[in-house]
Image (tube, rainbow, N blue to C red; front, top):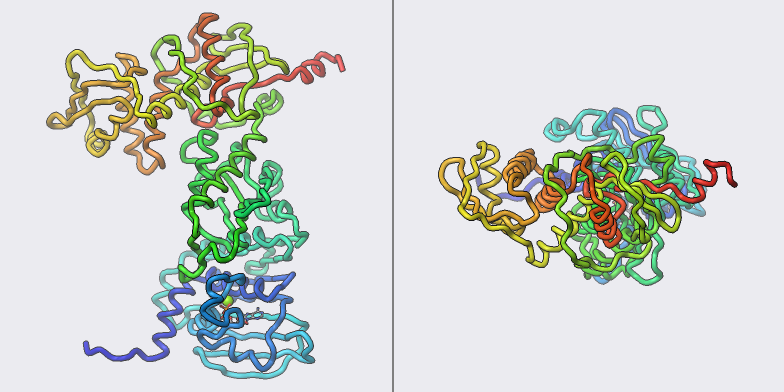
Length: 560
Ligand code: ADP
Ligand code: MG
């Protein structure tokens, strides 16, 4: 084909493809415009998954009658004057492409009225061009109506998902902005049904109640932002409220809703060991930092940003979240534990080796004060499964398996990081036969398993030679543990494989439930638990103990 310039109409649609991917993108751009206009009320109405109709009305600044047409010109914007402004963008929009892009792929009309104007302006566009203009009464603000999205681009239409899915994306966009701007009253109606309504009270918690419900909101802990930049504020869910996807992590950078792997990782690290593998928290996190320390101009839909100092942001977020969790997480109280299980019990009680005493070693960093346990005095064992102990404030029932798992999990992690894993060499190398699925995993991982104390090498068809295993594992158990681990790793993306290995090793090496312990063993276990970083939960996220406070005891015995 010869090279030639594309028809301007085609160009318009190609560019539109970047900004307007699906109906929710239109909603996002229009809501951002309404927010940039300083609105305190924004209502969104959609029909047919946003394909038939999207209508966004606000009470913001409005557009002066003389400028209404300009708003639909590509690269025409009121938010940016020169290149320098790009360094410190305060508004959500700045490229002047949203309205023309939307106009290129839908039928658009606008009614707008600026402050001080007697009447508003009505402008209708068709196929990207102005079709009619008149004056129309309207209080200050703007209403944009987008109809028949992608009607002339069947290829795009075909790629849309079901109406329900598109509605879900739209609801998510509006929800995110409702969380980012609690002082704005949002309403969303989907096919005539009120899907979301926020009060505009200015309090984040009120928005959270509307978006996630009262129960989730109740469990959310406030982040106490430090005064210094980067300032991290917002609310985070307690570990017991968790989800299977990362879709409930909301980040707003200078009030812009962004996706960020960096921030997600900071949060997940802060929750490390408090959630079961594969579970994710609910968080609403606002990050404020100087405008020139974040580049918002790196992504077509502005949904990703680049930080000048990623490290500082990462650790500020991780610290803020961790601190809030530390202060909040107390030992589960008896009422909670009795009325409903606090954590789903997904632990496999499969450890089969005898409790072999615990090697000495305050190898752990000093515990964070409020997360740490008080010194406990062991009173005895119940059911060969629970250690009964007394603390400064009442009684503790400790799940011996879960507690030991926690201790071993931290020990294995530490040893691995310091490359100090204790190994037991085999007198003679042993062979390990594996299934095809297990083999696939082991072939890609056997060298990495070195870090954990395994010395394994391929040895023919579905067979491996094992020369050493971690000292922690019992002689009879390592093969079973390895096979189970390989099975679980082969089930697909479980997140952090190294964590899987650590958990699996801890689980297999921990003392079982049903096993009788001597006083000395119990004391040692409790002493080590006291030194643990996060003594209150096992690596799967289950509680390791239940606390019955002196106050509760008094109450129960009618002594108050
Ligand atoms: P951008 O937001 O990047 O400037 P848009 O194409 O989204 O580009 O909008 C173009 C211009 O139209 C904006 O700069 C703004 O001046 C004006 N505008 C759009 N929507 C609104 C609104 N809801 N209220 C007031 N002004 C608006
Ligand atoms: Mg815009």
